[in-house]
Length: 155
Image (cartoon, rainbow, N blue to C red; front, side):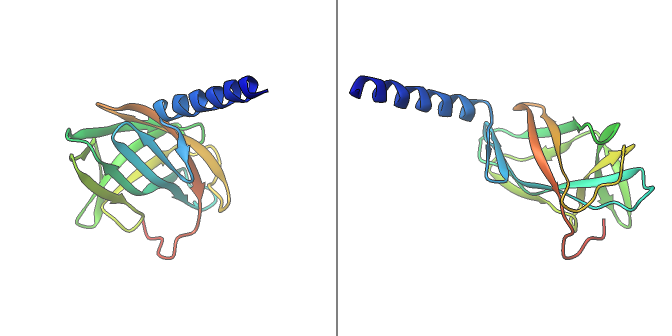
């Protein structure tokens, strides 16, 4: 019996390590190499709107090398664009730089957002959907986005 238990323990440990290597989700955050993507969320969109917005509570790079978020994809929209606020307008940019040893919020009240273009249906509070983010150095990761109404939602 001890041999069977040991084998199950080794299998469970191996499965856990495989999940870590693949960038597994923990709670409502994900790890991809040196990057931690904390609490992916989107705000509800108005009926008839063809654009929605997704965010991260925080994007952390614990590594010694810079990375760049190059874009993403999701089944709920036809395109995912990276946008930066400049003065009172939003501008689409090629990439979002992620400095080494940095923590950077991508919140709804901040200077960066992911614009979900061509929404297939409105984003409603309580919905969840997959979003694959692609980084220059770290590769791609699928995160689970929760649609929620933040305290101050003025994208």
